[in-house]
Image 1 (cartoon, one colour):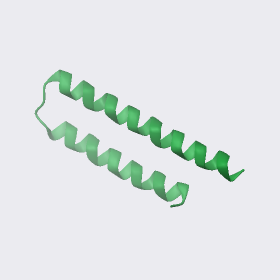
Image 2 (cartoon, one colour):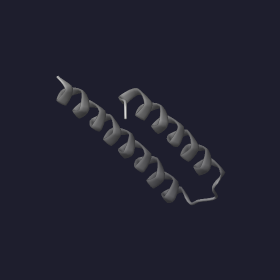
Image 3 (cartoon, rainbow, N blue to C red):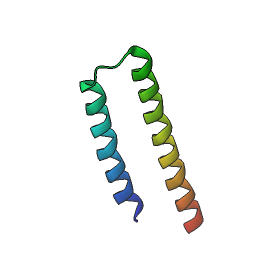
Length: 57
């Protein structure tokens, strides 16, 4: 899948997850863990895209 399409799909998923987390009734600890999981998943997707670009060189 092209890098820009993958990024657009990931953004849509992240926005949906943020919206779902805002609607959920969770404790502060769960919300903090969900936020960290979003940060980690974004970092992993960015790393995947960087590796893909470097492999193409």
